[in-house]
Length: 237
Ligand SMILES: C[S@@+](CC[C@H](N)C(=O)[O-])C[C@H]1O[C@@H](n2cnc3c(N)ncnc32)[C@H](O)[C@@H]1O
Image 1: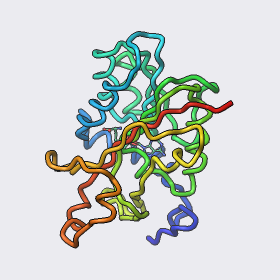
Image 2 (image 1 turned 30 degrees about the vertical axis):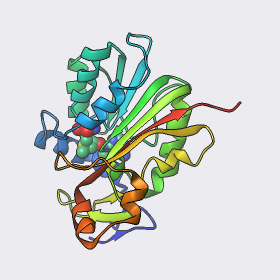
Image 3 (image 1 turned 135 degrees about the vertical axis):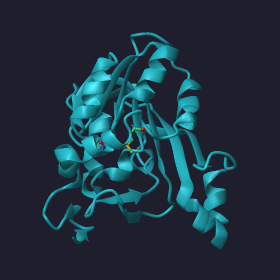
Image 4 (image 1 turned 90 degrees about the horizontal axis):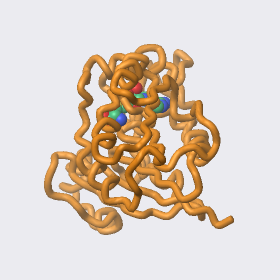
């Protein structure tokens, strides 16, 4: 199967979000029933933000998978939790954990305008259709409040890269500095931004240093790098 980058669709004319809604989301869930990603760095970054505890704060995790990350935050902060994922299995599980769960995709959020204080994308955007990225940013902007936060953790590449998704033929993952979906706009400021080696230890380096000084060996290793960024929204008017 050939995937046409420009259309953002596989040759069988399905978008990736359709493929995930029709079973690939559930397939991810079955492979990772307890969640799989190491989100320690995102967790620390979110806990360090100047946000009060308690039910008044509404947080939405887009592509929440098993909901385990929200569950951790609940214990720590007592926030009002919302999760959205194309996998109905994942959403069933999140609801059982007391999280408000919704089946759906990042480009079309079933929430009112100005609803959320915090939005999360944890290893979600790399699976979304390239053509949906404008809609995804627009939906995020619509459902967040002024003076809110958007946190993104995902695979990092300084330039846009497409890589076949090894679990499903015809699906592609992409790497990009996803925070740029927001940071170009005068309402958003990059509050925290770090790149780390997902093989746990070593890297906590400034983005520009990495970009400007990549040695051939680093380029090979950078396949494992993740970018963790939190943006602050503060509207000018
Ligand atoms: C790699 S898992 C990450 C799950 C969880 N956020 C974590 O960090 O462990 C990617 C998740 O994104 C979901 N997903 C895929 N395409 C999506 C889309 N277009 N919108 C929202 N979620 C999507 C998948 O169903 C899956 O649960």
